[in-house]
Image (cartoon, rainbow, N blue to C red; front, top):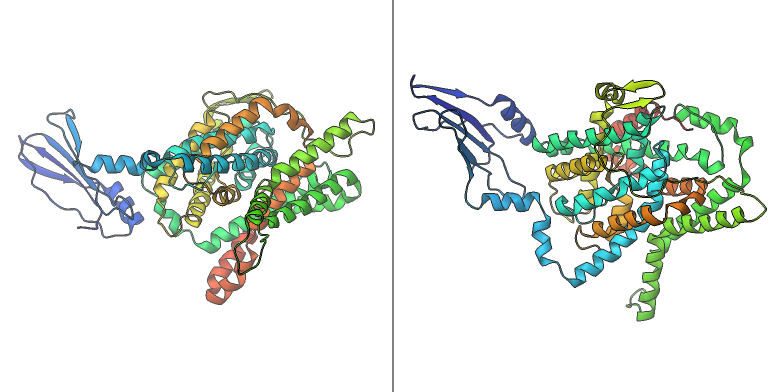
Length: 518
């Protein structure tokens, strides 16, 4: 079996009896670069007459060494047939639509496991979605608009059962840079364009390029971004109100206005952080003798501990909201700032905005693209990088089809933009919750998506009373564990070049990611 990528075009003109072989240069170069194998351009005997034949052979996947092949004959000038080798079409369809593989084996036990996991993830994504929308400079409901479409798309096309698609801190920060001083239309258009770029990358089979991005660069990027996000939340945690233009400026203004700190917000935010960190450790509590199996009662208690731990974000936000409501109905007044009105109901479904108006100035599609600039390329690449990294973390030793993840994530963003979503990708924290909840198939995302839609329909009036300090605490506790400072020493010992890459990327990134906090 050959292991080379082959691409060639044969065109015959019967009247001239001259054979012209045209090399598909662009496609060949792409394949040669991506797959890093020697390119073979074989010759073949073609029948006389007007005929156009295209043969492309590409490795199907790491597990499947067969090749996809098709021939398209064109008598005269119109294409008459394009056929696949027998049995190949079925394999390709099953590989690109994974639900066809696991759905026929679905049973009651799997349903119960997916239901529990889906509801648990739903309770986690609701407070996170509200917080990340605020971080992105959008109204809170946009976080929920971004949380359900990816769930529905990924259950059909997703290749990893543990991944949950939705808003993340990283995507929120990168979106904020494009929304600040503008309106939400730019975030929705960025979501659509990101999906288009990811879809194009999947068509060109560029998923394997993710492997060329080194671990130090990835770790440096996520760590620096996590620090920036955590510092950006100090304003909400302390109850301050100011506008900043960057990381250093934000720290400077927090220092300058530290005397204006609101005691209620500070105490509430600090208590929320302590409780969230303690509840995070609650799931690790083991009952019973170390060398013996726990009793039935101990197993039930450990399951309750785990459930409380994984639902900690929702529990903290609910308790804080009830506390805020009690102060609101009393004569004492509110001691902390609230989220405010959240638009109720489902998002408006329709085409993403290809033009917009800000003040008295109109922006065409090209104007909006010009304003978005390099983020049209940078955001989708960072999104797929994180998504593939999560898939590898939960793959249990199996290979990850990065091209399939590109296709799925692209469709998640494209279809999400029709529901006013900001750019989304896989969430490591929620994927970890999904995995720990015992999810069996991607169908768990269906129950998460339904829960989000129910929340949009029924619960949005109650989101008014969520304190901003509690949301800031949720974000800080989510991102501080993304700072992988412990990898620097091993990197330095094994490869000083990698450690230098980590340090350089972290330090270069921080000053150049600007945000403006209102």
